[in-house]
Length: 106
Image 1 (cartoon, rainbow, N blue to C red):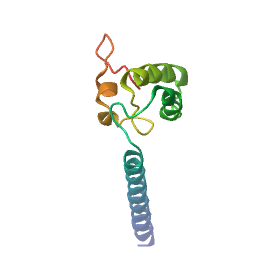
Image 2 (cartoon, rainbow, N blue to C red):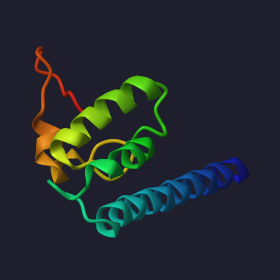
Image 3 (cartoon, rainbow, N blue to C red):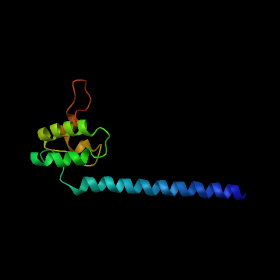
Image 4 (spheres, one colour):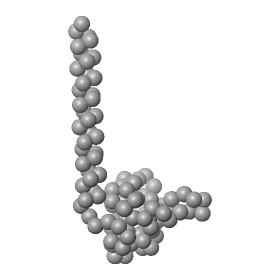
């Protein structure tokens, strides 16, 4: 009986923690999307290095990420918010493809 209660409490604690973590991550994503002016032409070319440094800061492939991000940024004048994803706010950045059809911009 005691073991069953302990397992139940443990399950509820894990469930609660996962719900809090999901809320925090959702809040961060919303903050990134609402905190800046994103979209085509929202940047000047001199802003690309700093925005790409932010975008590529959490990848293990930093040099190629920076190279392609800056190439995309100078063409599109846009870098999506966050460290990955969110490409929908910058259609040029999102739709630029490699010869094989994969995404060109990180």
